[in-house]
Image (tube, rainbow, N blue to C red; front, top):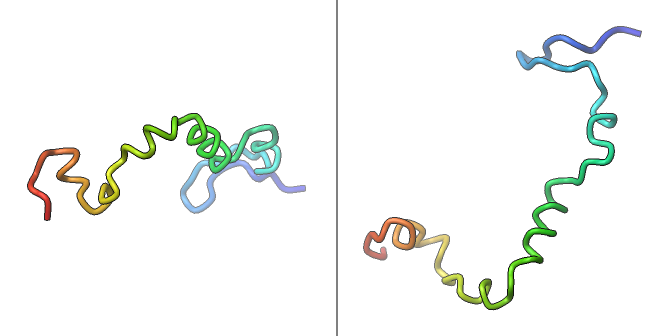
Length: 65
């Protein structure tokens, strides 16, 4: 069996298979879901509906577009 350590596409690799590295580690989506579920509904309702389109206004105080 050939060694898989070294470089692949210019990225250093450890030689371990991905399934071995991820075993027991929660997926990012599950982490995000768990963290999101900890935010109180009152805080979620306080987020402006136009936040994504007016991010500069809410972060930097620029006039709304």
